Length: 242
Image (cartoon, rainbow, N blue to C red; front, side, top):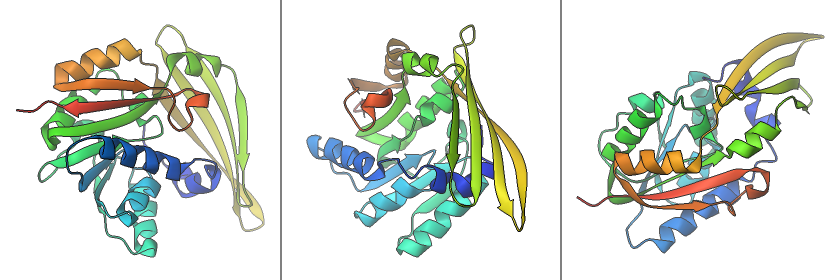
């Protein structure tokens, strides 16, 4: 599911996300590994906040996302920060890089957005484009956490936009649908736009199996990373040596 109208308001509505903590988590994982990490892929990079943070920390960055609207914000953000990541408009299952990267990261439950039918191909492509011995680090929201959101309603707002959204969990399909209504200021009036997002609930054992089938090993699961208290679970995986 691509971000559309929400893209230009995304950063203003997610100001509580601890991006620095995510960046520190990745750097710590790199430091714990024996390899060299210079060139990184930020898969499903969105508006590029983490891409820019890691670029400012000295990494060469590639950011890939399926939403042109989100990438437009990311490019502007990078220009203002004085860094120059390579941004690619690609679906995760169509990932196609010019060479290999030392590691790939994917944050803020982007993997939950991947359809079950697409996930094996996404992992296959990550295996192709991560160097032997490199790392893949991503996080998901746990199935239990997503189920607890069923029927919940939320309100996010800043001076220029009001976002009302409801979460509905489908236990037969193991997915959650977020229906969003955006009210944005347009002169003296307010414009209403709607957007829907779907996240799929994955079992940890299922993801481990798919990762191993794709060629990743030493899968470490960590529920104590950033936002672990709100159901976020990290997977740290090594791409098998050739």
